[in-house]
Amino acid sequence: MNRSVYLYILVGAAVSFIIRVLPLTLIRKQISNRFLRSFLYYVPYVTLAVMTFPAILYAAQYPLAGVAALAVGAVLAWFGVGLFPVAIACCASVFLVEFIITLV
Amino acid sequence: MDEREQLRRSILRGARDGFPIGLGYYAVAFSLGITAKSAGLSPIQGFIASFLNHASAGEFALYSLIAANAAYWEVAVVVFIANMRYFLMSAALSQKFSPETPVIHRVLVGFGITDEIFGLGIARPEWISPPYMYSAFLVAELCWSSGTATGIVAGSVLPANVVSALSVAIYGMFLAIIIPPARSDRVVAALVAISFAFSLAFSLLPVVRELTDGMRTIILTVAISAAAALFFPVKEAEGGKAP
Image 1 (tube, rainbow over the protein chains, first blue to last red):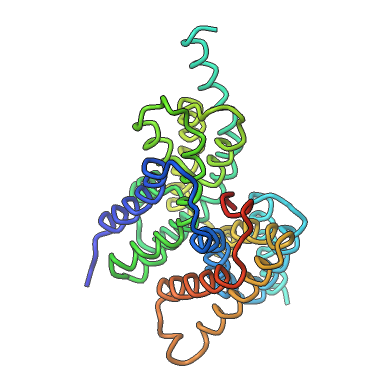
Image 2 (cartoon, rainbow over the protein chains, first blue to last red; image 1 turned 90 degrees about the vertical axis):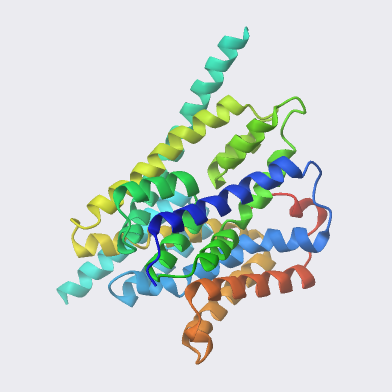
């Protein structure tokens, strides 16, 4: 079945809008349920981790380049380097590894 | 200082704070544009999608699912999961609004929430200033949307090795979000490792490897986060604060 790109965009936009606006307009007090707060606290880390690995290995032309990006990104992030420089360093390491592979 | 002058200052300060954020956005959005391009989006569609969603993980999931011709409900659930952290940020921001602020400002400031814009709003000691937030958001947002559109245009003319290099930018950003808290919080560190392991296992093992990327993300996120919340509930001080 062929679906409409605009409808996809609309679905994504509507969900994003509701998530961002609902708590601001409805919740005036802090969430007090401990399980719910803990769950919400952990969710972003788990989602991003699941989306990062093993996908990062297949993103570049060679898995080895993906391994390099993962290693470089993880080490720099560990030492508190910001989002933008980490992203650039990952790109650079892929570029470098793939350049070396094509030489060999 | 009269009201007009105060408004002018808020807008200028917002633009000044939004600009460096916008520069970073541009580069990441450019690589997102490459993903959007492979999903078949036109530059205009990419601009609109980025303007309305403005969320790296959420948009990345959206484009991957469009590429996979996923069901609409699947897109809704995955975007919901990927953007769930904005729910927390929105809840935190609700505490920073002066009681006199009209609800329309809550709606519009809420629409503009991203990790960085949220950071700006929380960083200021006074009540949220809607003009300041709008100005910072618009500057950063235009960079984000045009970055996506240029990525879609230029993605096809760039050499394969450059596209290959840029396509890991988004993962670099994800790493920069999840690794620093893992350093100070052992539970988060363990969760990242467990998530990596399960995600890899689910992509290799028979039966579960048939799941779509979206379903895998949903199932693993809910299961692992719920288990962590059950066994390692956060302390009072941590829970309210956004990552």
